[in-house]
Image (cartoon, rainbow, N blue to C red; front, side):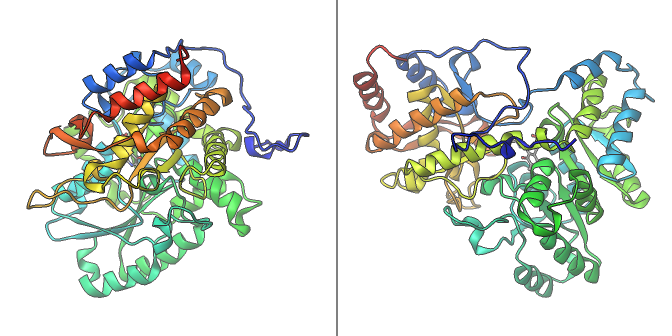
Length: 487
Ligand code: F0G
């Protein structure tokens, strides 16, 4: 039977609407609080959406990390978990799943993605090394720098263009890669990192063709390829949709090939398998042995790696489900709907639609807010005030300061609105778009933010900010004026 991806179902009325190919059997009640209470909540949370309490949130679009809906098969698998400190059958079932889906023999379990980054960085990166990659992720870069490495992002110029038709903005620029190798020498490059569905530039995939080209260069210089597979299912799905040669391939074959081109594959299971946890896979015994001893030291014994065996069972099922187009296309099809709608309404969003979420360009949305006043953070706070929708700042607040204490202005100021798999309905999506449009029409009312309390590392998590004027009050007042008693 041919499985319909959610995008492949045509409506007779011609509309392009994503169809939920699942039914909802467990639900959680949500609250939509009045604008005055939302204002109070964001004020209390230091204008940082990470510091909000979910009781005050209507649609939590902060992330898909650990928030995807699990399947009935995943939930039921948890019942036959095998509790054991060492040698648990649950681990061997997960190992078997990963050997099939990623085609890598050696598996190291870790408690989440950044733990894999810690181990890989500690083992392979030394002072003065450089690590080329399509784009960094926050925790990845922090671990690499902690171990003395320097990150080089070698994307093609098109990757940072907000409005674009480029189908693979996550590609590595081959010319830039060759220049880096010439300049620094292969000896200072422990590995090249590919991130599937490149998170911070808008969930943008790379092509298999690009990966093959990079692999050929890496092989010629004896450099490893490390793949961050946290969003690998979606990247594989985009390859199937957008790369002619793979139109007839199965997702499993595409996943196998991506992993075959990589020496080490690591992942956050909070994303890829809709559970918690993470792991590192390799086909090389030598690489496995280099990393192995750090797992009991930082994570837990080799057959649980800091995870509960229940999660491990659900991970195993989740990996098999990553080969199912219906499941992996669910989030991208909702992302595409939201992006296309917002684009139609004139709201500046990253195109083409990618994985994980829709990404509003805050500098295009709030051109009057200088980048030094964190437009993406301000937009995240403003959208929460007018809708109860929680998004995530992905801009300068998510960067660190330089050695002299100056802000490093981010390449892009984005508000990410994540679509965890199978969590939100179409009417909830339409509500979010509707309120974003109201905010866009009233964007002049939104002002900037400044830090009130700033932690030195990964400040975006715990940092507290304040508005540079009383703009939040004025915004809430205008909302009341327009919506009356409506929430
Ligand atoms: N790599 C990528 C590409 C990620 O998106 C994340 C997490 C990690 C590594 C780290 O994994 O959270 O399990 O430790 N991304 C989340 C997000 C936090 O919201 O995008 P983790």
